[in-house]
Image (cartoon, protein in one colour):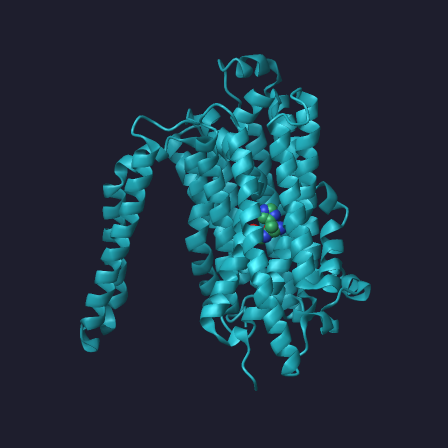
Amino acid sequence: MQKTLRDSAALRWLVLILISSLLFSTYWFYDFYGGIKGLMEREMGISSEEYGRIMSSTTFANVIGMIILGGIILDRWGIRLAGLVFGGLSFLGAIISAAAVAGWFGDDKSTMLIWSITGRVLFGIGMEVVCVMVTRTIVKWFMGYEMALAMALNIGFGRLGTAMGMAVAPDLAAGGSISPAFSFAAILIGISLVFFIIYIFFDLKIDKQRSESGIVTEGEVDEEKFRFADFRKLITNRSFIYIALLCMVFYSAVFPLLAYAPDLLVNKYGFSYEMGSQGEFAMFGSAVLGTAFIFVLLLIFGLSFSMIPRSLKKNGHKLLSFMVISVLFLGYVYILRDVFSEWLVNGPKTASLIPMGTILFTPIFGSIVDKRGKAATLMMIGSALLVFAYLSLSVFNHVYLGYLGLISLGIAFSLVPAAMWPAVARIVAENRLGTAYGTMFTLQNWGLAAFFWGIGALLDFVNRHRLSDIEAETAAYDYTIPVLMLALLGVISAWLAYKLKQADKLQGYGLENPGITQ
Ligand SMILES: N[C@@H](Cc1c[nH]cn1)C(=O)NCC(=O)O
């Protein structure tokens, strides 16, 4: 068979970087608000409920089926046109939001609020369809190659965007205005659209090669098109119902919390929005140097280990590797203790470590699911960890329990997606995956709409007697009840994961068996 562009590994990975940049920038825009919630409230004069309304508005068009409609349009128009239109829509939404907070439409509170919401609604439609489009593009280039790894790395780009957005936004707004943080995030989407335009040339070329060699092109793959009969079949499948509900409830407990986590740390534990005296640039430099140093040490360790004769390393090598990596990690923490000590009292920077950690742990858990199975059980464990995380962050008041809660949240946020997304591929036939993901993202947006807004509204309600003191910065928000409400979502998630396990036993998809992504 004639070779095409996708047969070159270098080109495949280049394509992944080009299209994943859209995920990086859109996740950045989706989540950077969390890092400047307090600043937004002060500058725009909005309440927590109004902040929640802005965040929730990202989902407004999606709750009434925009993602499914976007998926149908993607089927009809193909990756190139749909990518440009929906990527362009997310860019337009981001520009409108940036213009709104810069006061272009007017600097009174209600004008800023209305235009911020309008921007987020448009951004939200574009972003979710872009996610479906990027997944479809990965399948096009990586099917039969490193598809699971490519998907994990792709999500990793998104999480990096979330982490950096949350961590860097307060620095961008450090001059006393939130506007630069918005403009920067919008420009990032513009840059990633340029990368997407570069990708279009590869897409045109591969389609030409495929049609010349008799392979059907994307627009001709009729079985991949959305059909209502498939949709009906999907929503009457018990295992799919449980996993889709789990997706809605689990993500409702996680994504909205990210939008409030920095503020929670600032209000509950007295963390700060500003960096300490050491200077951010110096700290960033030492973090980068320290990371490079640890990579060099790992490389030296790897090289010297490969020189040890086989017979010697046969038995003890796992233990030895574990010990060496642990020592290196502790050394890293020791070297960077100043950086950590400054970061771990800064709300946005500490909260950003949650998505940052998932970049490493999601692929690790993914490969455990591949090798050992137990996907439904791992989803139950991940959901139970959520309950622990939110109890630690609500009813207890010790900062170390708070850190432990954040770590548990990070593990849950890695464990459940790593087990959930490949499990969908087990339950649903490959050519119906687009419909399945579109349906799950729509349900997910229902939950997000309720909880992005609900946390803010509840926060204002339970703190209603001291809102003026909070505004005057003489009192702090009490987050106990809103976070406890999320712990309840963790309990429901664990129950849904258990029901999924039972349904799978009946229907025989083998979610508990290894090789789930094959
Ligand atoms: N709906 C998508 C994209 C997204 C990210 N934040 C809000 N929506 C999704 O949930 N992707 C899976 C993931 O784990 O990021």
